[in-house]
Image (cartoon, rainbow, N blue to C red; front, top):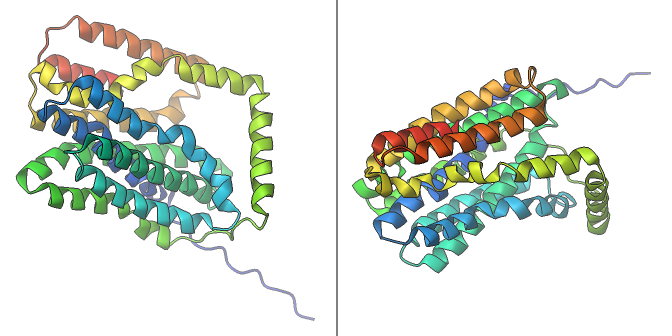
Length: 317
């Protein structure tokens, strides 16, 4: 009688390399939150209109989670992570080519970031099955580090690239950079799709959500997410305010890119160390309070490039 020999576990890249799969989120954020506000400001689009359009890029974060249980029942997460990442790249290209039509721009921006968000959620669930549970925190930190790092680099050269070449060429480069993460995804293993029926998957999802919402800890967390939101939201419109601080497009991209990248990456990688010393609830509120105080401090400064630089560094950190 022969005994079955277990197949060797597939080799998985180190956690820091897995984090590269979040590059589409970083590039998408750089395009929608930094490059486009600059381009619209150059077209003298009112700031209120720019803020509304920018909100369309953030809106998918509120609805993208619905797609998970609907797609899991027949598709492997690898399959739809790759598909939506590619769609996100196409959407970013269409977004950058629609700056003359603000309605089309808002629609394409929403669709592009929705696709990127769904792909990123699929990657998060998929990659968490490839690593030991003990490395989950490190994986999350590297997701954020690559997100912010790639976003910072993209923000540095996006507008300059479009100005120095053509909108068509710039849009193509940025969209290909966002879609390039599929190369890593193609090389990694993935479990088969969920074998349950669609209604079973959705029912289980609804049950989990209902159970979560009955938890006091979850309700407190939702309240905490709302509390400092105004302070955090400022980072998403600062790029469009460069002209108010007499700061050139090139310098805005450089400050948002370098400042956001350095402050964001340092903050992300420091989180696993800081959270060991300060309870998360107090830490989150403390970050929000510090951000609000920093905003008040910047308001007291003369409108100029130094104040803009301080705003960028403080708000992103």
